[in-house]
Length: 327
Image (cartoon, rainbow, N blue to C red; front, side, top):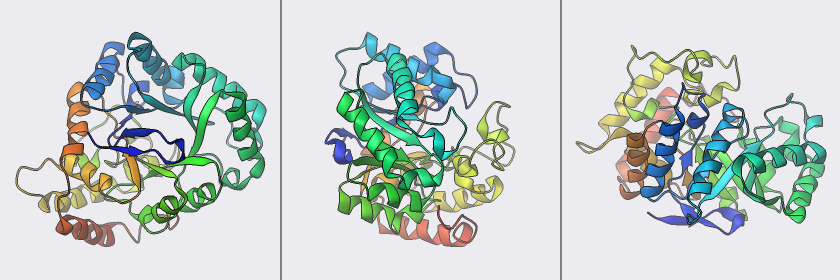
């Protein structure tokens, strides 16, 4: 698998990583043995970057990764976690004392003294422009509890504010064939600054897997069921904020752009990987088969200019006018 430098961390990571939100059972229940099997399949397929968060299953995802790495000390895996969503979302909560508490909890969950990469987890917008926040994060680096820090964002203006700070190592942002706004300014700014881009929700919460129909039903505890209108958290996290039925129409057109027999999901991931400035893409997986299939996208290569032009044509037709202007 191809490896790329993860921004200012200086570490190299696989172009396809593994997002582990699903392993926290926020997409429906996942048995511990199944979660471990997903991690094993990803590693066997060449993945060496795991993305998690302290809020995924309230620590369950971190604990699963920590236990897996304890059993496999020979592996060189970069683990990125996120912090900040377990408290009221007000800027006043993003202070050094809280950061220390959150980082200490994640270190216990992951079974490590020093976290590879900690990302602020979509905090209130003013946090991204607060110098005291970055000073606090720098203090954590100096104290040795974290090696590097970055941000996870909902909006492009948030990403640009973080990129402008000298020690921001990475920006995690929603980027997929139905969410193109980051291509306009965020990716160019990140390339110029040497900041890594972690592309999340690359399959639009499974829409771009090509497996869903209008009759598809999701479990009650799956956010694709209960958060379609943004009633639980930002609607952009569910189907990238697009209407499910309209998204299915766009998927049909996307699949028609592909060579015969080309899997929709792998093509969608390969398209993200091909965008200049992307360090790694982090699709989730709930099964061994999904983990292996996602990793195989790294071998897909470019699907040609026609696909890129088609993606932009679909975006203009279905999404450009309906998405939030700052997404």
